[in-house]
Structures are given as C-alpha cells and as structure tokens.
Image (tube, rainbow, N blue to C red; front, top):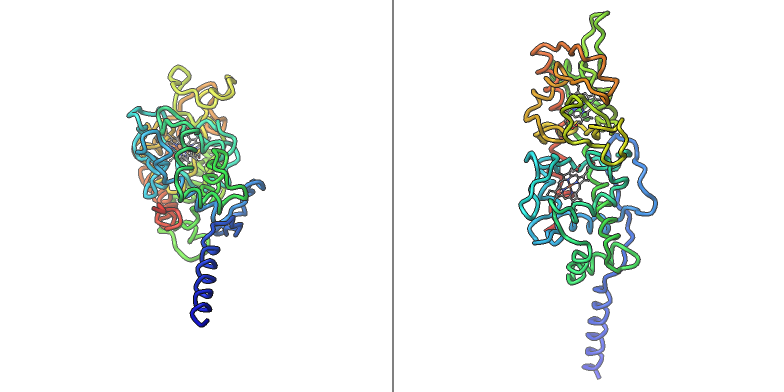
Length: 353
Ligand code: HEC
Ligand code: HEC
C-alpha cells in the first residue's frame, strides 16, 4: 500500500512535470527601452512580446534564412559596426555584389518614410522578407525558409510561444523580425549623456555641435554647417528622401527614389540616414563613395553638385560652407559624440546562439 502511494506520487509528479514542459503561447509584453526619446508609434497589430522579440532575434541570426545556410541578416548587419556592413558593397550567398552600401539597423521604430535607401518598403515587416529573396543577398525562397523552420523543434516551440496561432509561415517570420528590429534602440551616446547633464563635451565637440545646428549667415558673419536641416531630431535624421548634391544630372547612376515612383522629380533621391554611430559605419552614402568623415564634410563644405533635383536647402550653401580645417575637425569631433557602445554591445541584440 505504501509502495502504491509512492508510485502514484511519482506518477503524479512525472505527469505534472510533463504539463509544465508543454510549450504555450506567452503574451508577456516586452518593455521597450528608449531613454529620453518620445514613445514610438508602433503598429497595433504586432504588439511587442518577450517571446516574439526573442523569435525575431533568433531569426536575425539564423543562417537557414539563406539559400546555402551561410548567411544571416547579421552577416551584413554586424553588431560592432552599428548593425551595418563596413564593406562598400555587401556580398551575397552566390558571391554577387549588391549595388548599394548597407544601412544600419537602429532606431527604426521611429522611421516613417519607408525602408531601404529608396524607401521602397513601406513597413519594416515588408522590408524584412526582401533580403531573404534578393538574388544578390540571401537568395532563398520563402517556401523553403518556412519548410526549414518547420523541421526545427526549437522554432516550432518559439513560434508557439510567440503567436496565438503557432503555424509557421512567412508572415510571422516578418512580424517577428519587425518586433526584434523595433527593439534595437541607440539612445545612450556621449551626446545623450550630455543632454541629461551626466557628461561634458570638450571645447572642440561643443564648437562642432554649434556648427552642426547653425545656419550659415554671411551677412551677419555667422558660421554654420547647416547639417540640422535634414539630420535633425533625436535620431539625427528627419528620414526624408532627398538629394544631397552628390552628382550632377549627367552623372546620376543610381536613380534612387525614382525607381520606385517613376517621377522625374525623384531622381537621385535617397533616404537621409541617421548620424547616430556614424563613426562606426564607413564607407558613407548610398554607394559608399566616401571612406572617411573628412571626405563627407568636404562634400558639404565645397563639393555640392547642382542638379535638377538638388534639395533646395542646399542651394544656399552652393558657395560652400567656408569651413576652416579647425571647423571641420570640430564637426567630426561632435559627430563622434554620437557613438553608443552600449548599443552595439548590448547583450539583448547579440546572437542568441
Ligand atoms: C548580403 C548583405 C545583406 C543581408 C544578408 C541583409 N541585408 Fe539588410 N541591407 C543590406 C543592404 C545592401 C541594404 C540597403 C539596400 C538598398 O537600399 O537597396 C540593406 C538595408 C536594410 C534595412 C533598411 C534600413 C533603413 O534604414 O531603411 C533593414 C531594416 C535591413 N536591411 C534589415 C535586414 C534583415 C532583417 C535581414 C535578414 C532577413 C537583412 N537585412 C539581410 C544588406 C544586407
Ligand atoms: C538637404 C538635406 C541634408 C543636409 C543639409 C545634410 N545632409 Fe547629410 N545626408 C543627406 C542625405 C539625403 C544623405 C544620403 C545621401 C545618399 O547616400 O545619396 C546624407 C548622408 C550623410 C552621411 C552619410 C551617412 C551614411 O550612413 O552613409 C553623413 C555622414 C552626413 N550626411 C553628414 C552630414 C553633415 C555632417 C551635414 C552638415 C555638414 C549634412 N550631412 C547635411 C541629407 C542632408
């Protein structure tokens, strides 16, 4: 009798343990950290959950998303490079070279002008499936990706935790990647600490800050670099799609936004990138034509090219910004205060594997 009780107890314990092991949908909300930034307006149909964000992180680092299993999103969006690629053009699974420089994956929760250099993806979930299928990137079909994920117990479990309906499909791959990318927020640079009063800028950084936010006014002898016209707000970009004077009409090679809208006034227009962590993401511009920040500053200082679609805000500086070598060094010192190693090393954004 005593033995039977024991047996029953053991059985009860085993079956109970089994119940605990059953993976279930877990709607625990994810708490987004964004420092002093305003709250982002996230899509109501894809609420951030701990399990959803974790699934997105797994997928971001998942090489099964590529045709031959050699590439993940992180191959071209490396943590230490501000989730960007420091090669001028990324190389896809078949060795093919893309035609544009990669972009950073950070603070995307606030981007409202579309994704990619030409803004061709309206939403992040739409963006997320494109590199998988791009022949010069991961070159895989969504059908194959879903088949591969379905054959993995780890993914069966994680999709079950992340979504009410556990079926694995490409829409959910997109939603999970969207969730994870929304959480990738860089808000803790030296500049942010200065705003909070917990860090001081050097004299050079402070002079650079003033130049950055000032409009040149030759009549009143006021120097300014005018960067804030487009690189403004807490993300150092209004994300507008515009032409910052890299080429004259005859030299337009990549037509940028025009390829999406077929509107002549959109020729050679590209999305204004954030300048956060800019120190970490050479080379610069959509085609990676500038290797250093010095070259970028010289472009705005004296090399703006006239064209039919040049942003009117740059007309005023066609005469050149007339920055001295010291001014240029100060601007770069300021740009480097936007570097946020707490972001690039944050364990939450590193590989879960
Ligand atoms: C082979 C390299 C490569 C891989 C792999 C890759 N990307 Fe990219 N990514 C790029 C390039 C290049 C661009 C810019 C392309 C363009 O604008 O036409 C880009 C742009 C982006 C952007 C746009 C950012 C913005 O500010 O608009 C996001 C987001 C992004 N990638 C996320 C991802 C995700 C998610 C994956 C995995 C599913 C991924 N990438 C895989 C190279 C890559
Ligand atoms: C009229 C709007 C405008 C102004 C003013 C402006 N920019 Fe830009 N900036 C852009 C656009 C648009 C791009 C992307 C252009 C491209 O790649 O074709 C860009 C790109 C950059 C890049 C490269 C970013 C990357 O990820 O490759 C840097 C750095 C930069 N700008 C810094 C500055 C600085 C510093 C100033 C002031 C001296 C400035 N910008 C003024 C619109 C502007």
